[in-house]
Image 1 (cartoon, rainbow, N blue to C red):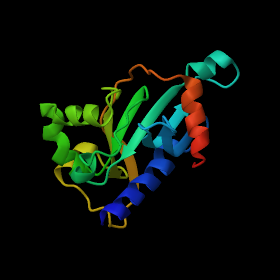
Image 2 (image 1 turned 180 degrees about the vertical axis):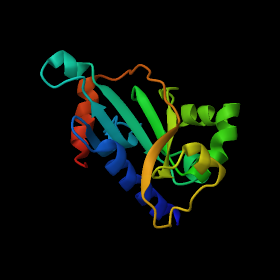
Image 3 (image 1 turned 90 degrees about the horizontal axis):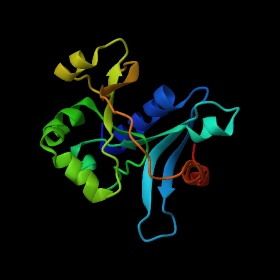
Image 4 (image 1 turned 60 degrees about the vertical axis):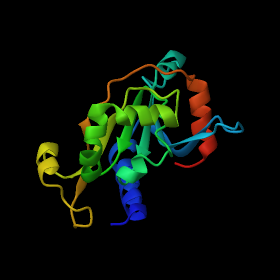
Length: 182
């Protein structure tokens, strides 16, 4: 599968498997700092409020940013990795995860993330597609080709610990609304 098709595959699976459902609000291609010389785009941004009845429940909601990366070259391209949510994930293939794991361990990936987005949160994880009913550990050892006729699900292979957020709920919700893509 080429890069474009892999990105499309990962995006569709992310939408159907993690973003859709009751109480989940999301948008794609969310621009941050629009109208400045430092515009950033987040592939997918999700908002999950604590509740919907009280204003305080909405203000306590959690933003999760997802950056879809088809391969190692895409991860280190200098585009994306705008981790500005309380939770942030790189959505990629198992093969790509395996190829960037040494960079994660050495700190090279974190340096690259900070270079791309100096305000990025260090709270990020990795999500990969795994054939349904397969353990991520088994898929790590013997990755399945994405082109096979398989039922896939997204699995967190490297967990993200929730961190703080520097931008307001109002600003991020407005950016999601302005993207107009969901």
